[in-house]
Length: 509
Image (tube, rainbow, N blue to C red; front, side):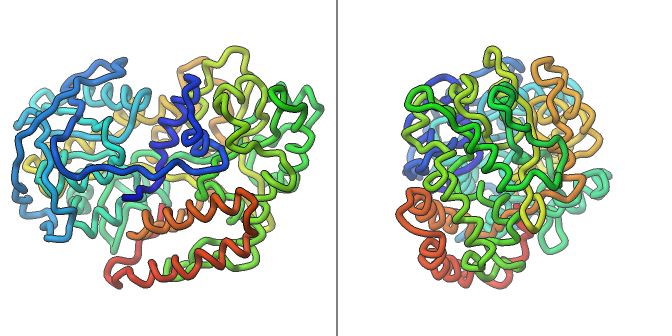
């Protein structure tokens, strides 16, 4: 079974890389020339999970519990969508060993993000002593979202989910999560309090299915000392600077690419996952799919130009490392001054802040003829449609997406809060190692309209698999952008044609 590469894979890769453990597959996710090998997971048998009821904030590991007991599907509450026979794989999964009176919460996150989530849960229980929350994680599951399907089919999926927004439409149409519109209205959760795009991502057919919690704006990290050493003008601090174009980035990267072999410095790096091409594609005036996500637009001239430029950074201009050049690990190489610029999500600052003597900053992505744009994939809180703790589960979800919850879970770890009231905590973090960084650049991406939504449909995983495989061929210099588009476009169109009419309309992520 093929699984889509996710931000959580990149997170784990970054952690491994910072510890000097990144293998070729992990390097590919963080910026090498190939994508990780597809994972294979078993959908039957006992489930191993980590469960924590009131874990300390600093905890980096939860207790692992194995359970072989099996349960049948629980009846959903009257207000929740009813699961159908095709909602999830027909498989049995072990029932999590959790307090049956507690609300269960799950997340794909690992430390340090997981520690902050546990801290927020602890703070919630201190303020709501009558509601107990069990935190469940599945560190041994190759794919968190496939694991959720198995647990849902067995009637034991956790009550509250912290999930990536790109999986929201699938969960809605598989009837795995509750509609939240009425409950959000009653609780006074208002659209005006959130970034417009981040709110709209969680709305489908006029109904809300998730509460926005954060987004991860992609920016350019750069080594200030390298720019000074080679006499290169650093990137601007604000968006839409007319002098900060993709051609200007190439010019700077060319000047910053110096030396050879183990002493070589590379001018620019970005993950080889195709979704990181979006800022270039949008800047060039291109798109991946049309506006209603019914047809591929990869073969349009603007998109082809952007894709070819992406490949040329590695193969024609040689300012970007290949996987073989990143064997020491991305964090280590950036910290050692061997990579001058790395384009990635803004919270990466928290993964490099402890590198000794590293003088770095954040800047906007460059502009093209259509403007400067970036991707900002997001996470949200959703509720299991089968929950037996409907009201308590919503109380947990409401707290985690409130100002108090977001300050602990999101703003203190470099994730951009979806709730605008939490922005001061984000822009002015307490950690002195990151306190003086240009966090405003990520906020301005939302505030000034530089964020666009990725083309997510219920066929996202399948589309990602197709594009990821062929994108590797493009970046390996084995085909042109035109060849790439000609191969994948008919397959993508066939996927999009297979989406039922009543399962369309999601804005994207």
